[in-house]
Image (tube, rainbow, N blue to C red; front, side, top):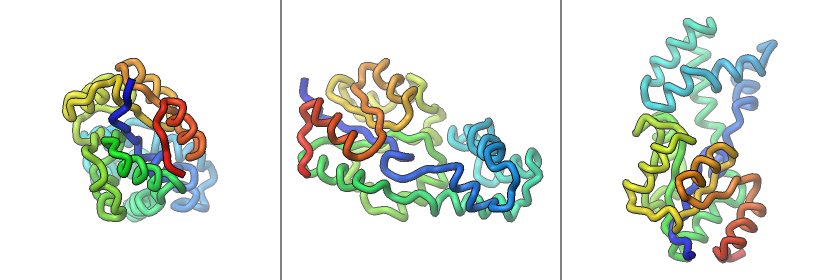
Length: 204
């Protein structure tokens, strides 16, 4: 079957996302950085921000009340989060190569309004995409079936003609459960190899 559509995750596929590094940079003197990573990035406030339920300012206030971190430090944290999102070597080039080969390119990401606004201003590859689905805009996170169905129905994609590339196993499995072919991203060479196994030729 012919693949026509290739969908990229953003964090840890197109750009690096490393909460542990972010916390180390933002709070270098904190004694329990692992606990802080959990509290900041793996609990309800962060998920609500990614779902679009709360604003960045509301998240800052909630973190302040819950964790006792100063408002100034929390504002600096969000700046650090955004500035840390640098391209992963090779993946933007892969996106451009696939676009030149006439594949339809999309993005599907669990992300906040603020981070997406920053990324769209910072990087110039977005016009190559035919569409972007952002969790904060639709109120669903991966791997819920709703977010994949939103992608398919919004852009009229046939699942068997679509490949989704994501770094997290459960998100890959969620896509497969919706009939979408999927690749778990580890590094650029592995990703290209897996694409070629699907008969998607990638110029090197």
